[in-house]
Length: 57
Image (cartoon, rainbow, N blue to C red; front, side, top):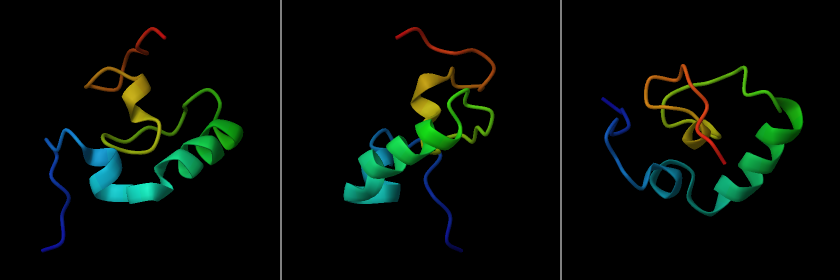
């Protein structure tokens, strides 16, 4: 089974490698409000662990 580690602390690198910064820019351009959220997905570090609250900053 090919499944990512839900608890991986370095998930940006593990899942996306050197592509993460570029993907984050694209995500910000097309989803500036962060409507599309998934745990350990591009841009998810800006949200609480449960995905209901934006983190400050």
